[in-house]
Image: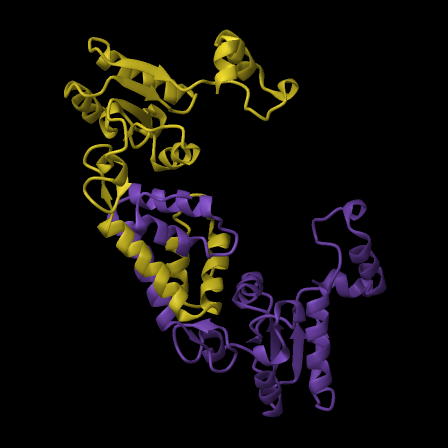
Length: 205
Length: 205
């Protein structure tokens, strides 16, 4: 693309470094900003700058936070004996939305993925092992994605913690509550049969 | 969505004001920036800020430019008697890429679209009429989209300039050079028959 303005070209180039945004989309977004009041671009630029320079990670659970100890870790109403291990802040938000979990979290920051060059030391796994070593945690619930990478990460952490007293579980995989059985994929349906639960348990919830 | 950080929430809110970017996509983009070096976000924020505050519109053709008179208008190698009327800078870029047009441009900044609240006075139509009144322009080529809005805009400008000596044409609509006739839509195929050109003309180019 031949740009009539270096400033425009620069903005498009930076914008198109974002994942899933090509040059054409970037140009469309930037031209949109040019048609809007200057304040909109100012707010966008300032909020990105502040977010990147001022945001913190909670020193306990490594969730994104504005302060050193996040709201969840600082709360007196949470059960500190049970910790849910997740990939990133989006998983924390999703689980918090259910209002079903009253423990704490541990945000790994991703999953082991040699293809993407992410090894165990790029994640907060050592920090999880240290947290468990403090002795307060009784149970870890793994809520990683059911992929090769998720399973690898589960297994790696499992090996690290095998000798300790901590209980380890993963979230249940099965047919979604409103899903039709006939449309479920075979693997999910197979797992939901293997991991069937006593009827009286399912009636309780 | 419940955010664990106000800074994150702010950045996502600003990002999701861009067209076609919802809250979830915005969160994904912002989390991507958090994983990248701080310099990437800095460059993005700075380039957007500079673009929005420093970019100019050419005083002749209203194309986006870094200076008061754009490169095309300032060039001595362009034919100043013929002007192509387009919607925005993307059309200028597309036509420049063909290397087939050696005249100047006039960038309207959109097309008349009552549904979107865009009237003739939101576009650079008066400026085009004034440019024509200077007497140097002999031909205007309209290259607006073949939509209701494009046709309305063409017609509005045509009425304004009917009394002058300027010639007016629109770009040819027809079957694309590499397109199969059997797959062309009826309207395009119909137009390409109505607007057929003498065979010797088509052999020349």
